[in-house]
Amino acid sequence: MLPLIAEAMSEAVAVNLKKAQGDYSDSGETAKYPEFIPQQPASDIFKSPTPKVLTSSVIIDEEDRRRSLGREGKPLPERTLRKFRKAATEFAEYRGSEDAS
Image 1 (tube, rainbow, N blue to C red):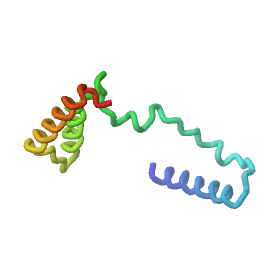
Image 2: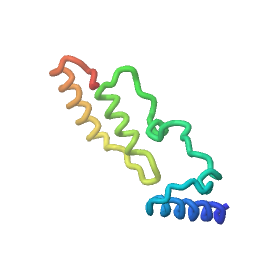
Image 3: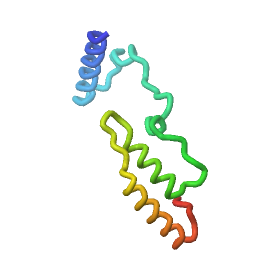
Image 4: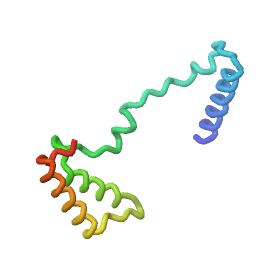
């Protein structure tokens, strides 16, 4: 499989080099590979389902979840989460709404 991928990449380099030099003639080299059409946008792959109402607590929970992902992920310390939640609650009271959007 790797030799085939290497050959295809080499052919792509040759075609792009010709185009960079101004040769846009259709030699048929590009027709042998299908056009790549992604099934879904890449940005949608990693998104978690969003709630109907975006609140500060949802944002804090998502940040904690995101930081704890991965091999060496480290969740936010409880003390930091308490501080963030307190500040978010105070701001929501000042603002008169919990809606962060």
